[in-house]
Image 1: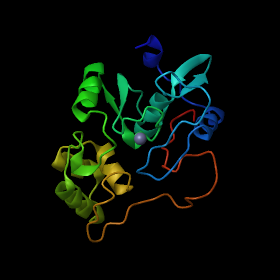
Image 2 (image 1 turned 60 degrees about the horizontal axis):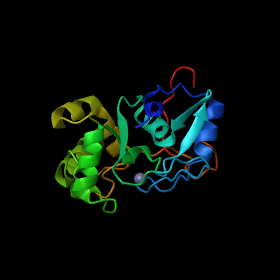
Image 3 (image 1 turned 120 degrees about the horizontal axis):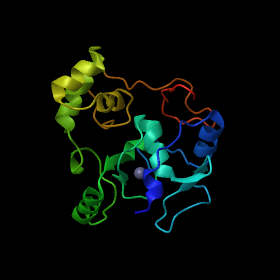
Image 4 (image 1 turned 180 degrees about the horizontal axis):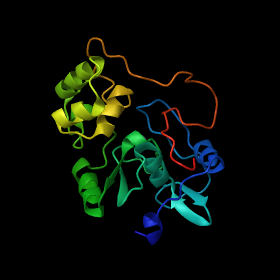
Length: 194
Ligand SMILES: [Zn+2]
C-alpha cells in the first residue's frame, strides 16, 4: 500500500467538491457509484489530484459521507474498487480487508443480514425505524441499540436498511432530488471552509 492513501485529505473547496462529484456516476442510494474520471489505479481505484497530491477517490468519498478522514485503509463492502458510494465504504485494516475478501470469495454485493458487516439485523432495523418514527433523538436510539449515530442517520435517510419499512417510518430525503447539479444526492453536512 502506498503512503498516498494515508495523507490527510484537505477540506475541499466548492470547486474541488464539484470536480470530485462530476467524476462520480451517482446512481441510486443503494447502488454502486463508480468513479468515471480518467485517472485510475491498476486496481481500478479512482484518483483525484487535490492541492498537488493524488488521493484515492474512495477515500475522499468516505470523508464526504462519514465526515471523518479515514485513519486506515478504506474498504468496499461491495468489493467494487471504483465505487464512491459512501454507504459502501468503511474504515478497516489491511488484514480486515483481505479477510473480508477471502471470506466473501469476492462475491457480488450483499445487503442486510446477508452481509458479514451488518451490526444489526432486519428486526433491529425495524425497531430503530419505529423509534425514528416516534421522533426519538438519534443519539438516544444509537445508545439503546449500541450502534453509531451515523448508522441511525443512515437508516433515517433511507441510505441503509431501506428494504425494511416499519409503520409510520418515512425516509427523510433531501427535497429537490433529481435536480442536475454537481452536489451529491446525499445531504452533505457542511464543515467550516466548505
Ligand atoms: Zn459500491
